[in-house]
Length: 237
Image (cartoon, rainbow, N blue to C red; front, side, top):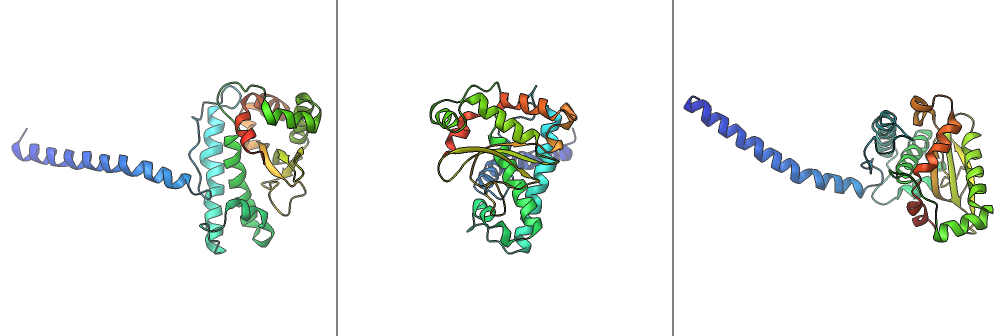
């Protein structure tokens, strides 16, 4: 190698190494900053293929990187336009006062909150039965775990068009199942279903259509294999 070219190669290699080192030091900080901001899309807590065979990798990738990402971006635009101080107003508070904001804020704020919550409701592997306090409350509220599954599944199956199925805890501590249309959720002051979200299922077609087509009941039944009951229990009031 020519001496000049060798010096140039070594110089550029050093710059590349330095840049890579800087990049590695910045990326964790950026990820950490995002984790502290509920208005931003958080990293998916598992790989796209981690929920197979119940939810396929292609669906997860499109769902997270396209649909959910759009809600986060549009929420940021709405907050900027409507001068929402995201450092002082929690996302939950925004939901609880959503009637004071635009339709864009309602749709995208709900879409962002719902999806961020939804990812946490699932975990790789096969779900076990709930236990402890959450199982006790399910039995108290519905009579049995199977009765709960039936009510939750019916809420998901019978939601006409697009929307969500929910397990919530009402202000009196009792658990209830229900559904909301589009990207509404039980925190919103405009919702007829109100309470603390414990578990959510996305029944928009983009959440299941590639694998299940029009068989929403099959998607719902299989999805129960993914529920992270430990996360659900942490949401109890």
